[in-house]
Image (cartoon, rainbow, N blue to C red; front, top):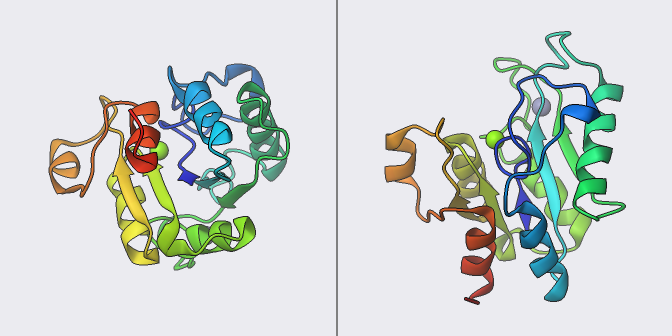
Length: 168
Ligand SMILES: [Mg+2]
Ligand SMILES: [Zn+2]
């Protein structure tokens, strides 16, 4: 299972480099606990263009990621980060499929068996490009047409995980 970070597992604080400002979204912990109960491996795939733009450092991203992992009780949680800016033409910035493919390979799970849970169109399109199953969890910032176009939508991250696992 693959998760977007900002706006999905944690409350989005744009270009945040401060671990103290990390807050989980309401059901994130319960969602990963459910995955653990089902022995489903998971990773995080995150665009961090603030690195390329000089707004945050790689070290700050790593510190925030470490805080996310700690709050989730998921020591060693794998993070796959695109540090590039839009327009650089990298293969990893979502909606490109690169991060998702790398994450699936690291988890040892065929990409076709991976779900991608995220809050915006780029997450859905990256999943479709990679061959994974997208589930959109809208936030107040998610555009209505993004919701309308998503193949699957869930109201919370926990509901998305339940949907993928087929449990209620
Ligand atoms: Mg997001
Ligand atoms: Zn990239």
